[in-house]
Amino acid sequence: MTPRLHVGVAAVLAVMAGACDSESAARPERSETTSPAQSGAELSARWAGTMSGPSNEDEFDGVAVAPDESVYVTGKFERTVTLGGVSLESAGAADIPFARFDARGRPLWAKRFGGPGEDNFFDVDATADGAVATGWFSGTVAFGTTTLTSSGPSDCVVVALHPDGTTRWARAFGGPARDGCNEVTIDKSGAVTTSIDTQGDWTPVGEPRLPRVRESDTVLMRLAPDGSPTWMRAVGGAGDQRGKALAVAPDGSVSFGGDSVGPLTVAGRTVEPPTSGGLGDAWLSRWTPTGTLQWMHAWGGPANDWAKGVVDDGETVSYVGPFTGTIAVAEATLDAGEGADTLVAQRSATGKVRWATSVSANADLDGAELVAASDGGILFGSQSVPGIVFGSADGEGIPLDDANGGTAWLAHYRPDGTPRFARTIAGTANGRVGEIARSGSRVYVDVTLRGPANTIDGEPITVAGKDASVWGLDLGG
Image (cartoon, rainbow, N blue to C red; front, side, top):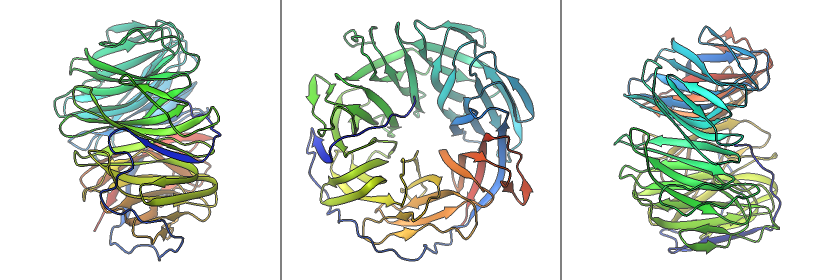
């Protein structure tokens, strides 16, 4: 779903189940930095695959890795593109590309889904059984032998594919207005968890009928492995509510976050976020495997605050997202000045703050998608900007290591909130990391590329305006 600009009053609120408690003293962020961490972790680009076409609206919004280290990518494109050596042509305003590459970057297949309207997949996850992707579609669209018709201008769509790209099942959810699904996760049982941003006027499974809203409410949803809905839980309110961050723990518990305009109504309770002048603030929640709310926390400043990425390992919940103004997270006070910085924080599974710090810069930052690192920490990336510093829970941050050249970067935070490295990706002359997936020491990232100077192993990457790409990166050391 599209980002929204927020303006509000700097504040922070933590609600439900010990919101302001701290397991360990989170220390105030300091401005000093050390030299870039010499961790021995080399960041090497092994291969890159592109989706190239004449439109500036072509993008990968989902990247997922299977157990055999093959990679699925999806998103949207307009007009025509070349993806994995296959030419795809849109049937309408925007269509859905879907492709799979093997571990060496060789394309296995590429295909298109869509109709005359606006169609987009926003995320994908994968197992040995194939991939599941979520997004929205308009009108009537065929997914394999299943044809779906939206109830309104757009519906949420969840599609499961076999490893060979054929459709296993496809499901649509929504009402007479605009609806769309965002993040998606497949757990070890094969169950699928996603969320729907919706304008309402339909009845979720096990919930009261949603009222029609001007902007959107959000609905957390779990599906059985065959795509049938198991439970749905609504997060609503008088203003706009959106789900943006989603993770499932090994036991099936769900961490779910996003942003909200005004109070949230969840599990029969009203949650008052910080006073935001009628615009948006960030929130994060955790739910049991059967859909019972465990806790919810909210925070915000004078503009554009939301939970963007989250990782839940069953014991800790690590998360990132943009924040503005001055916020307090347990004993840590973080100040973004006049712009927007990225909050990087961790809570226990019970919601207590373990540590908090931030990534700051001389330009606005907007958060990132997250993936778990092999040491129990987190990995995420974005694009370099002037003065970027990666803060630390122990008070000493590091600047971006740009010795490799490039503008897209990858950062690794340890489980204790200290940055292990923050390093640019060689060859990304005008690139930005978005989606991210990991298998062992191999990390796969979606990099939006612009301009003619991008390379892989010294070979130029052809870019027509703005193109999408997926990169296989190795972490040594």
